[in-house]
Length: 586
Ligand code: ATP
Ligand code: MG
Image (tube, rainbow, N blue to C red; front, side, top):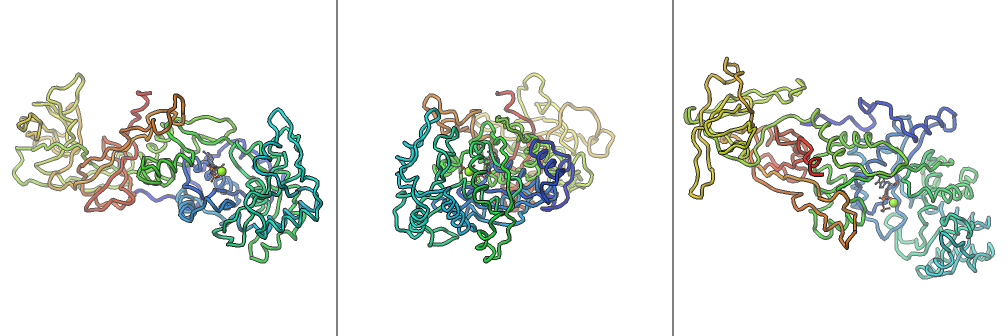
């Protein structure tokens, strides 16, 4: 079994405990030192409209990681303000993924928990003269908004009285108006250089029941309003998000300041009535750069299309950059955390090389995955000098660098499967493996020689017949005799036939998002990203539980498939090869 992950919330162990130094953690440190907060509160706010991907892992490790490192808490908050796009399947999967990554939320919240507070807040803004109901159509709103070079124009409805606005807003909520007929807008500044401040919409009408809040709702809050107030309600101290929200920060601050939840506890009454604790404080939004990785697409739209168009075999296809896909591929939570640590946190947009992700997995599994033998392209080798029916067991250590992994018994017999590519009739220069008449070390078993190459009528090699040096057996004097190469093998009589899925990168272009020359990411798919073969694994690999990771010697790191693997019908996925084979291609 793969050694267990540290339990969620457990004290960090190296290398995780190594102090991380990025600009956000510095801000947090400074804030704590200055006594600005009694404790740190963060949140991770996914929209439940898709599965989480590796980019989200960066946000999760940051939001939950900072809370953990500084003795604070992190909430999981579903941003469920758009009922049209939500699905309970995503809600379940997201919770699964966060826990799998090794984190636990202090509280599970939904933006919809705060719908009543948002309405009270909107009414407060109206009363303050900070919001108005606007009858412009979406198209007119666009016309009035102006551009980066042109100021916008005030809506003709901007001067409505508080009473009229309160009345119209109440009627919007009562369902009197059609979708899109009216909006509630903030009254800020149509001439602002920041277009986000040009009287942005706070509420829109959408006649659609909400999966949690119920059928009574037909107005829904816009992201900036709901998100900033959600943070304030929960007493989030540091609201961490990606750089594209930088231009929204003035609006975020405007909402927090004008609504002033901390100074208006009456607005929180609906929450107290429902037993939802809250802290009401002034949150600070801090932006960091998104994670981008080459040879990958991360846009939800494209991930949906890959699944919808059958270009992959589902959301958890091992080639997908979703956390469910990476998990099925054999990525471990610790490898992903290591990767996120390596990438670091900054405000600089960049694209990380896919090999950094693969490197983190190799490093993690090198330390954590027991070794096994498997053959993915089998060729029979008969050791003709051993008696018919000869069989024995050999003791193999499970890990070359870590004795705590113990040993296992590996059956050995007269007939073995070896890798077809470990034999060459006409060897290329520098060849170190089997040739007719040549010798090779059979890993842990002795030194073998090939005497006869058996072919079928078409000239294909079907079997090798050879000789095992009786003086080269484990523990004997000749065991250390020098031979050129070492190959792996499994005993044909004992090995278990297995389906082996040899995965590679999903895209063969470094930038699959490149839409130049009328192409799309569909044209950049790697035709060799999945190859399924029948191979043989030693019994101790077949018997493993699903999701157990191994290094198959000389082949790579593999994982017993989470869904399809059975001891009597093993299925292994190649998680990553032993070496980076793409560096040379690039
Ligand atoms: P959408 O395309 O629907 O806006 P999204 O990728 O922004 O999707 P959310 O569910 O809104 O998805 O994301 C939740 C959190 O994860 C946000 O705080 C967002 O900033 C962060 N996040 C999303 N993608 C990345 C990424 N590539 N790198 C780092 N953080 C990300
Ligand atoms: Mg988003």
